Length: 377
Image (tube, rainbow, N blue to C red; front, side):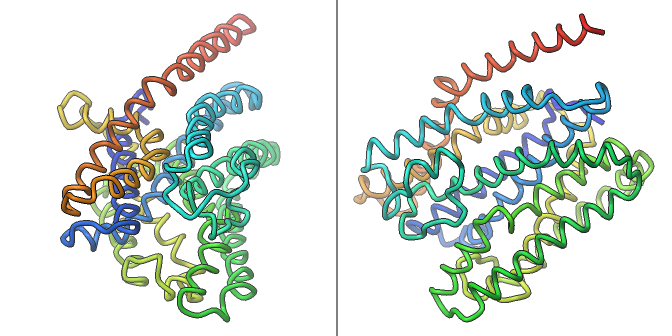
């Protein structure tokens, strides 16, 4: 298993995810190049790719810690996550509330919902500015629940029965989506169906743990199933082909579009998200466990893009909104390209001005914790 300091392949995955999300949002809000539309319409799954990657990385960190120390340091874990996520997030929340001109939607939900990461339980579709923060809420809920779940499962010593726990949690997600669909979505039609589906299924945490769960499965295989991993790596091209096949199948179910009434029919509601998550999990599994050169120009570029991706994700709608509303004399293709470039630049700036400082604090804390662990040993 390659250590994540840094895995060039995972940088490539993260870079692809942020670009995918950006071209989707730009297509939805103001349109984009016609030739890019078939790919852009499926860009909403970039968030699912982020979920798989986060599930893999976070669960691997916690499982390794438990294996090495016999415990999970909850205070360290949550301090780590807070320093990684909260400073730049609160800064961008402040931008939205202090400068209404930056709002790309019809308004903002109450501030307390953003501060408590409950903006997706459920989302107020009438106040849809900074709506993409719903995915951060899903991840925060995962961070709260998974360490407790891992500690409980580890104490039970279930061995190979963990696969049944995985299937049971996956089934719970399907059941929750069915209940939400039957109560809130089934009798709706047209745009009302899209709205109900987004509000009660697409954005809600209880419906969207699939990607994080498949990321956990990738970590388990990578860490604890060496024979299975060796077989999968031997046939890595087949695994990659299966991954793309699952994604292509998912694309076909809804014609790539989530903003479509058919995306919230019963079958897509139940099985679309596990299909997408399984497809991306196949790709992450192979990418995370093969050697990649980090010295090429391409690897260095995607490494930077991956490093800036969180900040880019937070501000890309603001940049797009300003460009599309202030540079209306330019062609749509020119505004599209300018939005992409300036979003990356804005993300890089915020990373170096705000995010990086808190990551340095996190690094110093990690060194101190490591010293304390060694001295105790």
